[in-house]
Structure formats: C-alpha cells, structure tokens
Image (cartoon, rainbow over all chains, first blue to last red; front, side, top):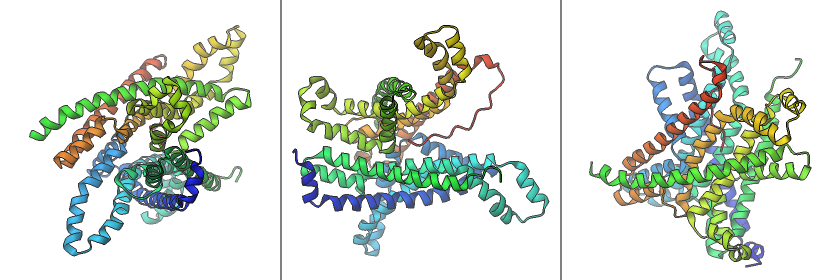
Length: 235
Length: 239
C-alpha cells in the first residue's frame, strides 16, 4: 500500500490517465464550442427580446441553471439510451453506436449546460454595448450584417471574455460528472484504477492534480488573450 | 397519476436530505470561508499564502474528485483509522459529503467575502481606528457588515450552486433528491416524468433561497431608501 506510486507506474496507468485527460479536454473543448454557439444564438434572442422565443430561452436557462448538472446528465443519458440503441440496431450498426454514443451524449449534455451559462454571459455583454454605437452605425446606413460583424461582435467578445473564461472553468469541471454514465475520461479512468489496484488515494490525488493543471494552464492562456483584447490605454 | 403518487413522497424524503446537507455544509463552509478571507489579508506570507493556495486547489478541481478523494481515499491513511473522530466522519457517506461540500464552498466563499472586504473604503477603517476601536471590534462593527452587503448577491449564487452540488452526494450512496430520482428512473423507466418532478423540487428550493437572499439584502440596504436599486445582473459565477 505504501508503494502506490510504483504500482501506478508498473500497471501502465500513467498512459491510461493521460488518455483520459485527453478525452476530458476533448469533451471540454467540443462542449465549449457548441455551448458558445448556443449561447450566442440564445443571447441574441434574449437581447433582442424576440417575441415568444425569448420566453423559451428564459425557460431553458433557468431550468439548466437551477437543476443539478448530474440530474440533467441522467435525463439525457437514460432518456436516450433505449431510443438510440433501437435505431442503431435497426440500421445494423450496434457496435459503432456503442463506441461513439457515450461521447456524443456527453458532449450534448455538457454543451446544453455550458450553453445556458454562456447565454447569460453573452446577453450581459450585449446589454453593455453602448446604444449610441449601434445607432451611429444605423445612421451611417450600414447593412445589419455588417453592423453585427464590425460593431456588435467585436465589443461583445471583449466584454464577454472574462465571463466566458468562468464558463470554461465550470465546463471542464462538469465533464467529471459524465464519468458516472461511463465515458472513459479522466475521472472514470481514476475510478477504474482505484478499483483495480485498491489504491483510491493515489489515483484520485493524481486526477485532482491533472484537473488542477488543466484549469491553471488554461487560466494562463485566457489571461494572455484577455490582455490582448482589453483596450489599450492612451490609444 | 399513479407515478406521481409513487414518486412525490419518495422525492420529498430526498428533499429533506438535500436540505440538511446544504444547511450543515453551508454553515461550516461560511465560517471557514470567513476565516480564509481574513487570512488572505494577513501580513504574514505563509498565512495569506495558505489561504490563496487552498482556494486555488479547491476551485481548480471538480467537486466530484474532492468527494471521491475524501470518501474512498482518506480511509487508506492509517492516521485517519486511528483517530476516532476522523474515522467517524470518513466512515459514512453523508458525513463525507458534508465535509467535501463545506471545504469546497469555503474556497468560493472566501473569494466572495475577500472581494467585499477589499471594497471597504480605507477611510472608514481608519476612522474606526482613530476612534480607538480594537481590531476585533473594527471587524465586527465596520468591516464585516459593509463587506457582507457587497458580497450578498454573489453569495446567493454560491448558495444555489451548493444546492446543486449536494446532488453529487448521490454518487457516494447518499440518498437525496438526485439519488432517489436515479433509483426511480431505473425502476419505473418514466425518465422524463421523474426528472420533471425532481427538477421542480430543485427549482422551488433555489427560488426560495434567492427570495430569502433578496429579503436579507433589502433589509441590509434599508438605509438607501425605498427606491428600487439598480443591481448588476446576477450571473452565477463558475463553480
């Protein structure tokens, strides 16, 4: 028991953990991208107060933000499992479905969650853009697509960036939750390792350190980008 | 209908567990967080450093890892086995969950309270000093009341995150709302219906919490007059 680290090394667990970390980052990045797409669309709908749709978006964000992530993952996973296996078996690729399925449903669940938080961030950023800028652009007769690309989007990005950083940090930590439904990511790998070597302390400590490294390194990256995006003093 | 008759009493039993987990861990976590926030302002490098690294470690790792580390990991250490008080905590799921949740929320709470403490105008503290107030009295009468006003909206968000965080206790055999919901889902196969009932319970709980925080806020801000305040949009912070 004292030689936990040696066990980890000899059992080839280092490679497994690194593979798990890669899956975690993959799920995190994919969900963040989809989340930002959802967030931008829903944020614009809320900001413009599009009739009917904005109430739907309100319902979506308040349900997702008020209900535990784990419950949402259970809903999507158990709710779809039967449905998807049935379809896949009918078309004759049950094997394929099993492999990609956990990843797909995981990304769907985490995207839905990060999308709800991104919506609020982006709506807040849109609301912070000075009205005068948009009015000036309209007065100049710019087409609305160019107003969005030249006036709204750049300012939105800059104001929303710190909030997006927060959402990313949450998202990468939320990916740990999908280990309970069986995707072989970092947390799941640690769980399996802990079970088969009877050494949970060392495995969960390693997992914690890897998560810490992911969050700290991405934090440094985000800070760099933020420094670039922030308005230069005296310009 | 039958399903509702079956599910609601079970999930209400879980609601009690969720409530007690939240209440106990928030009580412990708030006090720890307050201590850490004060430590952050200390002149001694190792005191403020400890508080800083504590906060980085707990905010940089998923709550699930912390729960598993405490529930599965700590039992391996001989020392924990030998001290009865520690073993009492580690040997049971709900006590582990409370410990993990309290340590986790302490990190977030310390950041929120520190933000409030930093925002206290230096002139007010100096005035209190000039009046001859002791350090403890200054903190109790001047700094803390001002800091908590500043920090309340963000702390409300943290409370909502804590309610949601208690759902992770279901992964270590504690039967609270999510734990019962998962069990009901696999027994009845009525996945969406069970989710809806459990979700409504969580939403109601969070709405009540936010309402209470709003009331406390209004009470603390009563000197500003009856005019409705323009508050910054509350965006829940990352957990």
